[in-house]
Image 1: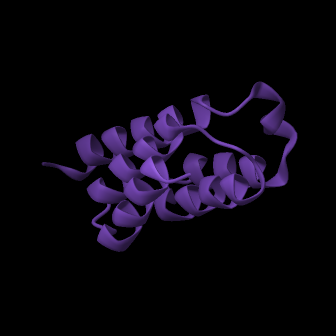
Image 2: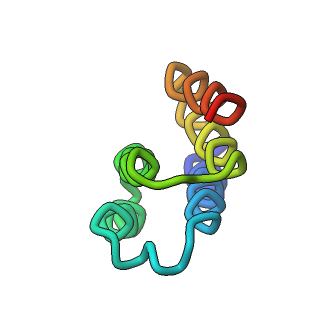
Image 3: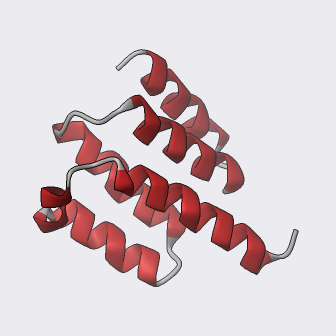
Length: 90
């Protein structure tokens, strides 16, 4: 798979995770940083920011599954496993 297609899929997974958090989260600094990293194709850092947001806020199972999918595509197997665990054991 070429890089641009993979990046599109990763971007979609990250956007799916972001879409599960409330709209008011846009004013949160980690979500703002997430968007900056996403805009610059820094997907691992964007993922970090979403995870950081979840440390202080309640997020859904779908959030963790979307991050798992993005981490899997980025070959971050430790994170993917952790996100899978979070999705079943909040």
